[in-house]
Amino acid sequence: MRENKDTNNKKKKSLTLAQKKELCEKQRDQKLSGVQLAAQYGISTSTVSDILKRSEHWLSIDTTLPNANNFHKKSSVYPQLEEVISIWVDQQISRNLTINGPIIQQKAVECANLLDITNFSASAGWLSNFKQRNNLHTYKKKGEAGSAPIDELPQMRAELREILQAYELKDIWNCDETALFWRLEPSKTIAHDPVLGKKRPKERVHFLPPNTTSFLQPLDQGIIYSLKAQYRKLLCQNRIQAYDFYEEGDPIPPPIDIFDSINLIADAWKKVSKKTILNS
Image 1 (cartoon, rainbow, N blue to C red):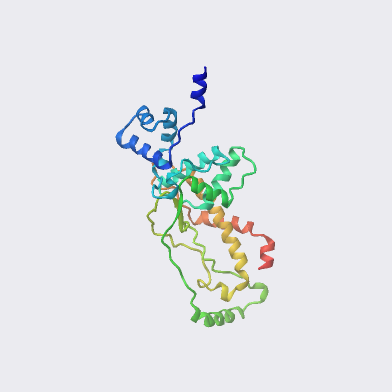
Image 2: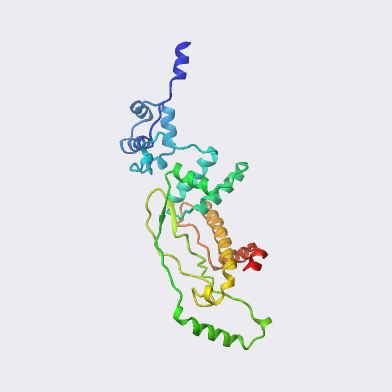
């Protein structure tokens, strides 16, 4: 009886993150059985099984990082949610889809509601810890930058005033070039390793010359910022739905089209508060 008690109280052996990766590599490359791996590493077969269930995650571990020799990562307050989001993120990464912080946070909130988890906000702190626990890093993708045609601004302003003289004030509406690239994915993506970039879509909705808002219409910055922020949030939700309905036989999830974008812009505008408009 004492022997069983001592056996049960024996300290459980833990493997470092690097050892877990090594174990998965041996199973993949050498086709070792669970019993053989358990004997090599001095752990139970059930522990081997648990590790292999997340082999895709452990194989992505960068053994050059300082935490690779840690025995465990800080546990999550919501382990069930952690597992669901971790698997979902790995699936999207394996499909070479763009994943950023807001997308992960939005997906986490949706899953938390499905799991009846209350008081979960998917805060920036949670996201940072989630990325650390799952060996995720943010990698910048290639992008482009533009500049305002400063030298042409006086002529543009004069031309605009001349055009407006033909109209009464009540018939003048404030339209603006928002630089809203409606199909543009985030410039950064979260992954286990650096990823290859791809040509970024350039389709956009515009009216006045690009990059002139702060000079010709300085009062609109708050409104435009709010509209874009709401649009990006809705775009994240749209991409999550597309990723979730993704079929393995398709090369990529269906992209949004101009009709989708118009609907998202309309929904985003409804979310811009009266206070934001009045204060702009």
